[in-house]
Length: 461
Image (cartoon, rainbow, N blue to C red; front, side):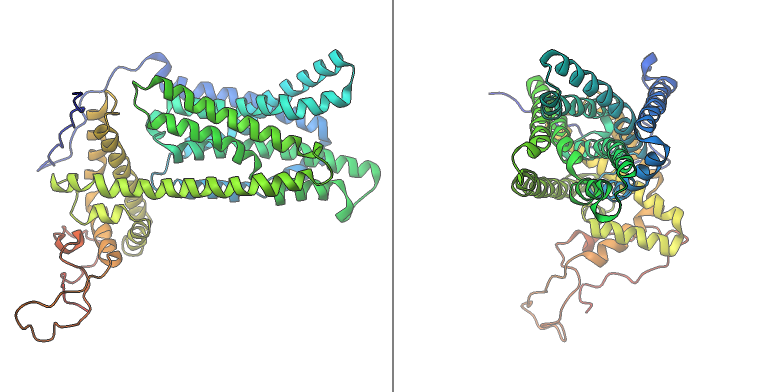
């Protein structure tokens, strides 16, 4: 009978000072900071300058400015939406900046050059420019654009593996990349439409600019993110697979990419399905799939919170956390209350420390979850001690706030009638039941900036 992988033991909390993570491993030349950050920054800067020149040449200066202003409108909403999905274990902002820049610069440049070349080649080979445009938009463009956007997800998956642990991370990276790509594409389409209106003298609601704005910004700002999110889900599923499951780790991203290409092709080809083809595809496919993927991501987020509540109590038993913290860290409402409490009583710096504490604790829970399922990497022990060290250094600022949040958010539990008479206790509502972790939480050392709160009373009303 096959034996289960051994579970790594839980280290004990130190009695004095912060824990150490052990010696650092020697980094290869491609892992050095000046290579990891300098090379992508240079590549994206050159791509940005080239794409800026190409779009401005296509639209003109005035059209470019109009397209830029209109294309900016949905960007903050989309970025905020993906950031909200990533609240359980927020990834670093540098990953989002890289993803957006890749989509807006590198992926857009690849798409413009490759699509133009392919369409011209098809038109020359078939001597039919109209069919070349249709074939280019429905076959060539989906393949080129989704592959170019998927490259950003692949790069983060390979080189920022610690920040890419599941489906939500794949959705966020893919969605932000596609948001950047759609931003540049919208500048091109809206700027070109404005130039057409300038030539024809049409303005107002009947203009091409207004129609383009309605279709691309009002009705379908989520179109490109929706396509690429399928690729992100594939990479997220690969991140959840064990290292030895090489077939799954390769098949899931490929399957997601193929689905993204197929959905993109159907969306681009909707205009060829008749007068109402666009609206039919929008109502029958885009809206339901958008709702389904939204449900999937939210369900995955709730599952991540359950993982936090399941894995962290063992660290509380080992002395790293207080008994109430796993409950508070497994509730988004409790996390928010903890940050608000810290901000109100100790300032913004304390609130940031609480937020970092929550993020490190979540990463620790996910790391332990992967170890229990036999998916821990060779650097598991080093990474675990790094995270525990970060928590230990912030414990005095974070523990009072999290303990307060646990007490506020814990559900009340009624006290059953005892076999002996207790005056005044019958039928009274109570605060926390004895079985709840917050009921047995020891009083942590108070931070100087936090006020003392009254001792826990199970019979308080």
